[in-house]
Amino acid sequence: MKNINTWPKILAILTVVIFAFIVLNIGIQNIKEKIYLMGIWAPICLVALRATSVIIPALPSTAYSLIAGAFLGFKQGLLTICIADILSCTTCFFLAKRYGHRLVKRLIGEKFLIKIQKVSSKYLEKNFFLMTGIMMTGLFDFFSYGIGLTKTNYRRFLYSLLLSVFLSNPPIVALGAGLLDGGKRYLILAVVGIFILAILTGLTRNKIGRSML
Image (tube, rainbow, N blue to C red; front, side):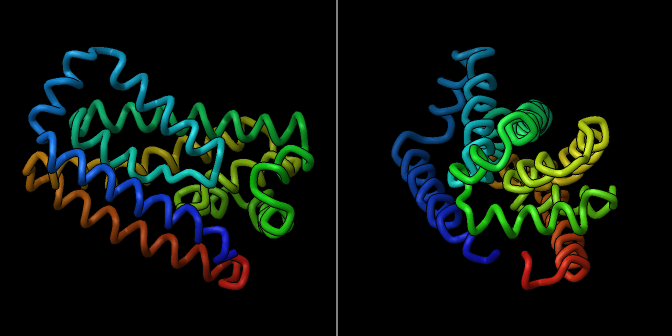
């Protein structure tokens, strides 16, 4: 499943480059002032952008966590990203339930669909903790579709989703808040959190099998 990450990584790099160019040319303080003037529309726009990048897995989504932390602050940024993830992953789950393989294949491709469905039905359907672990990785958008194709009910998926969202998002949002806002405590939280996430991702990969992820 390594090929799944190729285009998202390229798009993520382009997003970061564009973001850096904007910050350097406009200035972070000017951007923050403009966002502040937007009021409630700023987080709403971020929710829409993040959700779209999850529902359409080819689009990068991590950059929005950094942006949310940088320009909305840690607390508001985290809440914004968590709401976006809950809404978008729920949408992916129900799209898979309602329209099945035909729609999911169009969104992620037949080759990736086969691999994701195999992992979901073999490892995730009956293992709540493994499901939560996989939802904390960068492939959570793909597996929201994959789990939706199994017999897993929404309540079980929602519990797993909520747990993974509130555990995996804080480090990335904190990184954005710490890097551009100069908050040392957020940077420390980000480093520790990312380290823990890396360990959990490694354990998940070992459990499922590196050839499958």
